[in-house]
Length: 238
Image (cartoon, rainbow, N blue to C red):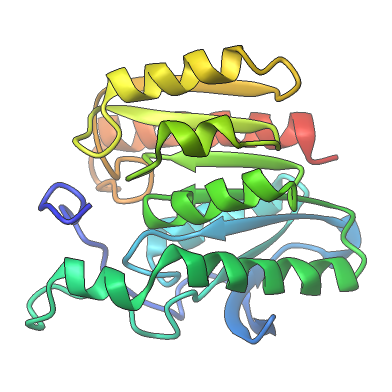
């Protein structure tokens, strides 16, 4: 994730984008959408560009329209990764380790449970996928979706306990297709854990959230991934 591929096509950040509400969950600022009466919640965890990315908030609206209460937390406390500020990504990552992200995610989930949500799913993009992997190991969620995960290891997947879907890219230096296929092999040997693995052709790392909305083909490929994510949640978060 420290290479240029991860940070290609950075979004224009606008934390006021969308029609959700600004709230506090587990001490974090969150963007929330949907009816709390549904009692089914989805946690969306961003890539390094943070919770204000318009494509991510647009997706939150789509997930909420599917009947879930959606929370998109600011795991970076306002300190999202920004190009051209003389702070390399490798340095930024040391300041935002996924171990801390996992602890924050647990606090958000505790808040959701305290509000009466009985089924919770989580989807993570790039950096966020690493946090969701930790959640899937701990069985704190009913379903996990990893979208173009970086640095996920074979050992991580062997320790997964929650139903998990992995959506990978054909062009990805961080989770190349051969590694994603190894993940599938491991999960297929774990019949107690429902799983779904898919490699999207002709797309690069980040395609599911950092796509150009003016590019019809790119939008269609991203929406295909979003559809797969929603189908996974419909199966397990109910």
